[in-house]
Structure formats: structure tokens, C-alpha cells
Amino acid sequence: MPAQESPSGPRIVVGIDGSDSSASALRWAIRQAGLTDAAVDAVIAWHYPDLAATSVAFGAIEPPYVIFQENAEKIAADAVSTTLDPASDVPVRPRVVQGYAAQVLLDASVDADLLVVGSRGHGGFAEALLGSVSQHCVQHALCPVVVVRGPDPAPHGAPRN
Image (cartoon, rainbow, N blue to C red; front, side):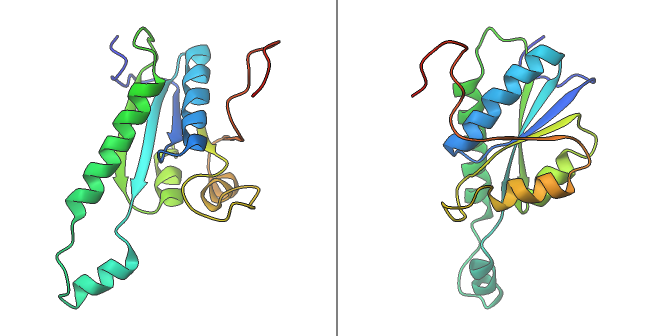
């Protein structure tokens, strides 16, 4: 089966945003999917900045929604292509959804077997233990949530960076 199709059966949703943390989460989700014969939905959310939307309402600028969508599509495609081994039979489907990240991930994971998020993405305060999106997902998801913290763990017995 091609790695980009999504069959019925177990499904893992993973939040991606182009950050190192989300790349680690995607790698973890793909490894888990390989162990559980699951498909992976790699979900990226985008939203039009509130300040820009206010400017548009007053006729100041034309909204470049297409640019936000295209940027998110590129981030998703790059994340999947750099993470997924071409020989892998794990189905991974990039999904681009307009909306706020936490709500998009919660909606995408309603019927999923697992939701995987990084501990911190692009945004928030560096000193936070969990990012606001991961914290919101942990508190409100209807399925189990895995928060991947830090860089990928080294294989057993290998030195860590």
C-alpha cells in the first residue's frame, strides 16, 4: 500500500508545525504506527492573524489566505518527506486545516486511537514545561495523548547528544 493513503483501522493524529519538537513527535508517531499497524494523520493548523483580520475588516489590505494555506501545505509536505522512510509501509497523510492549533487537533483526534504532540512548538514562552497547545490537548482530548518532550531518544545503548 502506498505510504500516503489512509486505510480504515487504527489511526494516530500528530500535530506538526515545522518545529523541532513537532518533528520529534512525528517521528515518534510513525514508529508507534509501525508497531500498531496504524495510519498517521500529520495535522498542521493555520489561522489568519487577528490583527490582520481587523485591518481587512476596515478595508486596509486584501487578505492573503492563500499564502497561509500554501505555507502550511509546504511545512506539512516537508515534515512528512523528511521524516518518513520511502520504504516504510506506514500510511502518513498530511492534513492542513484552518483554525487554532489546539482545537484543530482536538477535532482531528475525536475518533483517533492516539494524539501525539510535541511539548513546545513555534510560539509560547521558552520556560513553559508544556506549550499551551499540548497542555490544552492533554486536558481536553477524547483519546490518549502522548507529549513528546525534547529531542528523539537515542537507541538503547547509544550515546545521547
